[in-house]
Image (tube, rainbow, N blue to C red; front, side, top):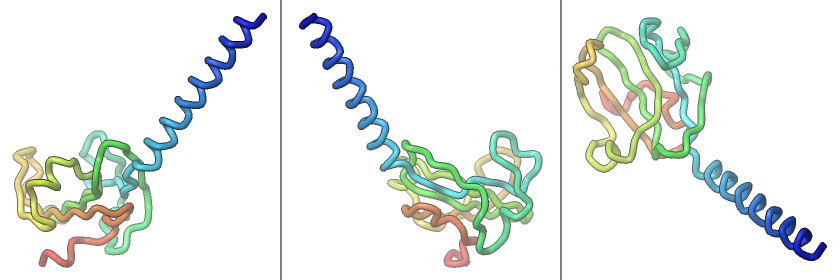
Length: 125
């Protein structure tokens, strides 16, 4: 009976550690607006309002990213998404780019706060 009790206590302890682990991961998760005005873009939710200057729509949390970004394509399309650590180390807050993905030239801005990508990179123009 004592072994069974000890085993249950150990299982409770492990379960509590697992719950705490996921709580801490969630606490550090980056919450960003996540959408595109390009209906042909796979993998990112389409939202016609994504191009609004004060967007307040679809957002998602992700634990491995460190910032949020807005991409303003020269053709008028807008994409809002997460910013990886590698980009934040190497890139300025505003950048002109062409990722060679067939979507054309763009202005990209990123920021480190949650949901900070509600704007249209006005500071870059």
